[in-house]
Image 1 (cartoon, rainbow, N blue to C red):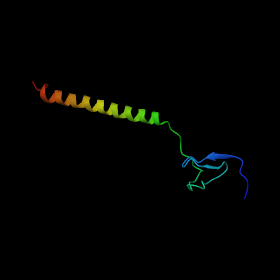
Image 2 (image 1 turned 180 degrees about the horizontal axis):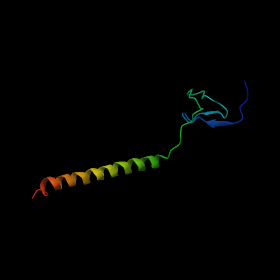
Image 3 (image 1 turned 120 degrees about the vertical axis):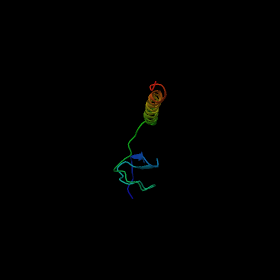
Image 4 (image 1 turned 135 degrees about the vertical axis):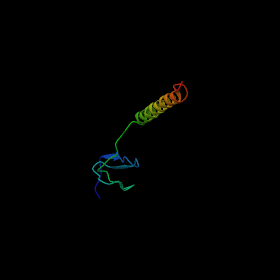
Length: 74
């Protein structure tokens, strides 16, 4: 058995593995395609922004439809 000098943490299970490993010995995940790191704050901000803007657009459309239904007919 070879002695491993350099270790890194597996991006999936966070266990220490050899730096040149292609598969995790703990969770058996393929390490060729490491997960992309994305800020969770950025993801939450984008989700909130999209939801807020679509809700605002919905309210504006509904207000216009209500206006034309009840007040523009006179």
